Image 1 (spheres, rainbow, N blue to C red):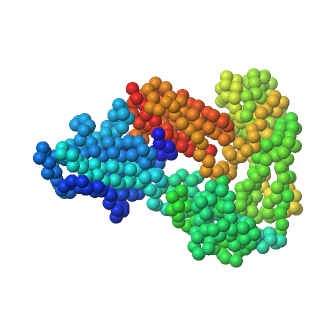
Image 2: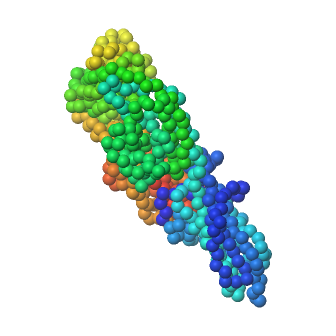
Image 3: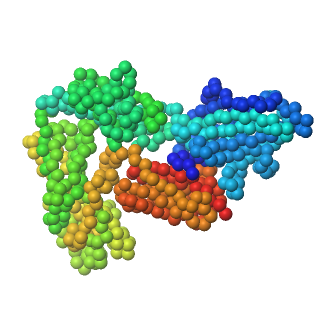
Length: 578
C-alpha cells in the first residue's frame, strides 16, 4: 500500500525533456550489457485535467550494448520492474514473458494487480530500450526501476535506476505595489506580516493556500517549518533567534498556521521585499513601496450583538477591515454579546465593521413561521416589525414574495435544518423600508471610542424565537476555521486514513481520523485521471468511515482515493478486482 501519492497511466508517449544524472548503475555477467541512468522530470499541470495536480509523462529508458553468444539461441530476453514510491511493491512489469498482445502499451492484470507490457525477445545490439509512457504526479519520493536482460544460457545483465518528478518552477508573485504604514507615536516599531501584502500570487503546481510568504528572501528554518519559531540569517543560513531580537527588528517570526513571516519595521527603508515560496522551496519575490506615517493613538471599538428579542448573542464574529496591511481582523463576542478591540484612531483608513453568526441548529423555524409569511403574502395579516421582513427574505434579494415562501418550506419545513443567520446594523427602520438595512458600519469619528450595535436575525424565524429553542452554538475554534481569515489555519497536520480490504471485489471501508469537526472531500479517480466518484463528508472529531462499493467503482483496476480537509490531505492507492 502506498500513501501520499497520485499517479495516472497514459497510453501515449510524447517527447519529454528530462535532466539526467551522470551516475550509471549496471552489473555485468555476460557479453551484453544494459545500462540506465537516473532521470529527473519537471512537473507541470496536466493540460487535459488541470485540477489533477502537477505531473510529468515519464518514458523509462535504458541502453543495451553487445549481444548474446549463447549456442542455443542468440536472442536476449527482458524483464523490467518499476516500484513506484520505492515501497517494495511492484507496480509495472515490462517482460518477454507476458502476453504477446500486450505490446506497446500498459495493460492492467487483475490476477496480480500489476500493469504489464510485452517486450519481445530479439538479437539486436547497441540500441536504446524504451518502455511505454507513464504519467506520474509530483512527489518527493523516488521510483525504483530494475532492468534485466538474459539469454537461454543463463547469462544476465542488470541495472538499477530511479525516476523522480519534481516541481522546478517558482511561483509568480503579485504584491501590493505601494502602501502606507502607520506607526503609533509612542512606538518605534510596527509589526508587519508578509502575507498581508499578497494580492494573489499563484503557482503552476501548488494551490494558492499552499504557498507561504517571507521577507528579504529569508526562509524559515526548514527543520522547524511545522512549528512557530524566531529566526535570523547568519552567513546566508537561517538560524534560531530570540524574541528580544525579533522585537528589536533583528529577526523574523514564522507562523506555519498563517503561512507567513512577521517582522518589526521601523520605517528606515522605503522598500519591502516580499518572497513567495512553494512546497518545493522554489521562490520569487516582488517589491512594495512603503509610505510611513504616524497615527495619534487607537480608537476603542465596543461591539454588541443581540437577537430580535434583545438577548445577547454569544460567539458572533465581529470583523474590522481597513486600508492597512494588518487588516482584516476580528473578535468573537462573549456571553454578554460583547466584543472589544482597538483600531487606529483615524477616519482616513476607511475602517469598516461587520458581524456574522453561525450555529448548529435544527430548531427555530417551524410551521408557525411559515404561516406568518403565508398570511402576509396573501394579505390576511401583515408583518409588524422590519426584522420579520428580513427573516422572511430567505434568498436575500430584498424582495418578499412566493419564492421565499417556497424556499422556507423546502429548507425548513420538509428538511428542518439550516444554520443561516443574517446580522445587520441595529438601527430603527420602518417596516416599509425594511430592505434599506445595512450590514456594515464605517468609523466616521475620531473621539477615541466607537460603539457598534448589531442585530442577529435567523432566516425563516418570523416569530423571533430561535434563541429560545435550545440553540447549540458551535465551538468557537471550529467557527474560526471557517471565518474570513481562513488562510490562517494550519495546513501541516495530515490525518490518518486506511482502506480495508484492499484489493476488494464487492465492498471496502475507508476509515480516517480527524482532530476536529470539519468538511472532508473524498474523490476517486482512475489511472487516466477521470473522476469516478466524489462526495463531501461532514466529519466529526475522531473516527469516520465511508463504505466503498460497486456502485462507486464498477470496473476492476487501480484507483486513487484522495481526501482533502482542513487538517490536510491524503492519497491512497485502491485496487478493484472482479
